[in-house]
Image 1 (cartoon, one colour):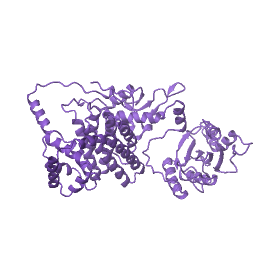
Image 2 (cartoon, one colour):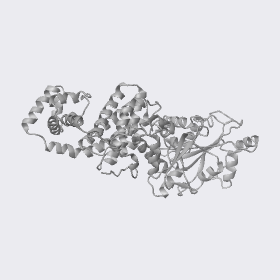
Image 3 (spheres, one colour):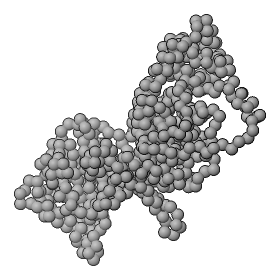
Image 4 (tube, one colour):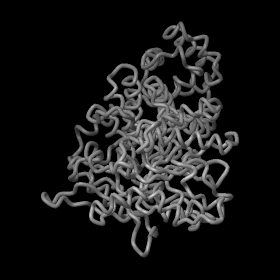
Length: 563
């Protein structure tokens, strides 16, 4: 059951909508199911003599008295509106049941506490099977305004109780960190324009993707503009400095003017102040430069993700929350840097994890600097290194599952559900990308004598896990990876012990597959030695600037790579 609180200034305008046909003629049999006084509330849906204006005047009675006291100035935003909707698949509720829901919601939110004779006037209108609209005017009979602080959260909490008592689907409790959902009008507008997403949702996704890739707030605004998004900074009148910003989607207008959304209205962590915690206001001088090894960004990202996994197990909540926020950036840039059909699953994982990257716990962003910097390097990576990319996805899906467990242990229901959903998308993307690679590794397995030697190394290095690893279908693929690592300068026995020590294998369902990807991300020692020798004898040079996110083209942050 989902409540959605908002405020406005026109009682009659909202009544016209509630009792009208709807924007697409979807309203059927609109009528009042509950009110502050059923006898005193004219019902245009049941009484042919009742009019919308009569009902508005009755509701506005105390507002009008207060307006006269204020010398003709109406109290601001005096209309309180709260649709309450059952979840898809829930049973049909009768008018009597909806009336109880309405009375409990207005009591819980402070609109009309139980037994308060001077409470605000309100009505609950039903014009569809699955929801009601509660309308209230927020001036009490004694002339005071009601105490409605945190009214959305209190409405949600009461709806969780109603779900349990009415036998309805149990939804996840919120913690006031969820972004605002598009209004019915915004969704209807998107539908009319043939768009799958409301402008608010589209802007939110673009803002997250851009913030993940850029290195300063200045660059953040520049890239948003390059995507056709209108940007309007808010300047402090005294300091002359930027204090906030608003965005408008291209083509989204009302009366010929862009429809603006403040950063904090898109999502709490997209506010200007929250962005400043993660991004400096000026361009950094240490923009990542081209490296000799194009696989290096992938190595660093995988290492940082493994470290983040350890942080969730052992560090404080603020540091862990900072790593989850940085992991959200990593997912966006991993999708940006990847190729192939699995990319869609990675993009979906990044989008749903946006809900899991924040909670009521204030994040320590400084503690997650290494992961955030590694994530940004991925945005500039020019090379998709095949197996390395799959190993990174493999590490990411395990961190997503750990994030779901971390949130669940702290009672963050919505975040835990979002992290679990991201895990499923990453798992699907991994399976799609890894299956042909593992099959190719299996086909290229070395000869029997070499496999036998690797088995001896395995039993010597990991005696407690050897039988499970040998029984894993990925063992032949692992032998190919071991052979390649040996060619690159690694000792197989020592390497197996090293990668197994990175994290326990007891809970791994496919330990050979786990070891395969851990070994895949190990650097080529002989190539590193050759590069070191070359660097000592080479003539110094000035590297050319790395590509900036401004070269990215259409959302979701697709880049035309210039080769």
